[in-house]
Image (cartoon, rainbow, N blue to C red; front, top):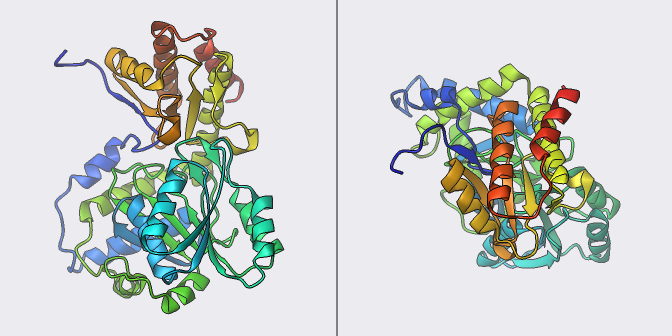
Length: 389
């Protein structure tokens, strides 16, 4: 059909649905990024981001995707051939590893099974063995979007402290900021990386950093090349309310509106909403007698649920059928999980009725695909939501 009636259900773990208010805000006329009106916009978005990161320190905004955020973080605090400890928790963790290696860093990868977050006990052991403190940074993904498993960052910080190690702590919160509890200052994270297209409800195009004092000191010594992503250059311009080059002005308009929406809902309420809808989704998966990719209850993501396909059934074929029949996009299995899972996104501007439609589309798709499952997942999720209002 050339025309498909009804709204499209974009149920990816990002990009997430962009609210009408944000779209309207982005549609206003572009203003002079050197003019007198601009510092108020800069100040509002930086202050709002500090609240979401839960930091009182420096926050930086770049016209980039999350991958640009990875590169910016590494290049600002490290020097060639310095050693970085990273964790194989999924596709996006390995993407960050690849970026580090392209910079000529000495990367040690801690293997993982793609079903758990990073292991604090294993980290503590490795750092304790590093008596000469050759490891300059520990880099970990908070919410691994390819698997639906979360790393408990407070435990990672505790492991570093227990080992009495000076390594910087760098965290990819690209898919978790604005939807899962995150505490940059309290957990003493040195560099947190985030992006616009997940919990912050914007289109792709902005990358964010929250930066500690230790990270700023490291940046003054680091010698990896940087120009576009130079923190010092950005900070000097930001202090006057501007950017060192042409910013993504209309995305900043959208960001200002998205931050206002999160503030109006109340950020604690935002986090509770994500947790509630995520648990309802997992209730449906369990009722279907299917398995989640994440195997640890304490590490289940509130951004997405990755569902394992039964043996002999292909996740990509299932997704294609759901898209064709019900006009709904589900997340694909990535890397070694290609065809083995599908991912249900429940992040950003999302409520109970949207979840009900999403789960109904999945359940109908399972039936049409002849996937072995037990009916009733939608009803189970709805009953859980009513009982846990």
